[in-house]
Length: 343
Ligand code: DOR
Ligand code: ZN
Image 1 (cartoon, protein in one colour):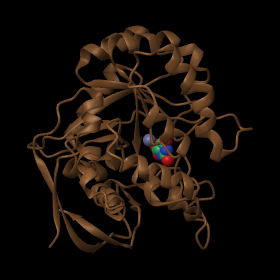
Image 2 (spheres, protein in one colour):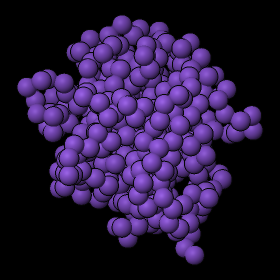
Image 3 (tube, helix red, strand yellow):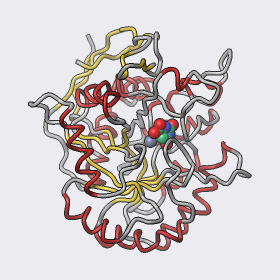
């Protein structure tokens, strides 16, 4: 039987929610990954270091005592975030980055940033204190087509920001376009990107395959095939500043299968298996370890994990749903055969 042994990976973009819902999903990530960057878009969002510390405690309390999983916390940037909060974050050993959401861009982002100019002092503080800026890279101008939001973000927000803050480490989260892939692969050393399984495996036709498919809806939205191919090339290229971030974003089944369904795809159940599928299809399994376990840690300035995981080539059926608090959660590719299995 074919098997691969990899440095234990980290997930550099993860939503675990809170309360009972979190208790249902956290174990799946803790099983596969050593560490995860925890997104702060709770309702209300995690805007202070104290809230991040409390949230981290609630995550750890959901895990068995002997677990070594480390949640790496982030702050949700608002136009009210103070520079003193960034200094506190730097000293906390708990908060590793600040997350920029354009207001209204996605789930629980209403308190996000309307004008990036207004958070200039905070960006300066991040640069000065060496904390990372994680960016949801889309604009929200309603006159911009949903499929063009990432490209317009690059031109109007990201390029000017990189020019202005050459010492700020920026992660362009969940890239979906050839424009983003080109920029990161050929761009400055302080710019990196994460890539999700769904954007590697699906193009936008999957949203409408035989009918409307709410479980394929996430933000940024799936893109055309040429863009998917570009990000597959970027992920499997071995580029040192491109790494794994699942953006696993669980929503209860009834909130996805609704007249106004929530954005987000739950991939944490079998995240490494999904990525292995992509890398295998490209004949690039040899590049999976660095993408999943080295590049992200290096960019964040964290030590690489010392232990390993094993994936075996074995077919199993992804469940139709898993418990999610009192609700149900539909995993990505529910009911389909998965060709890799985490041991
Ligand atoms: O699809 C998404 N879901 N994109 C995001 O940016 C947020 C996430 C969520 O929190 O549900
Ligand atoms: Zn996300």
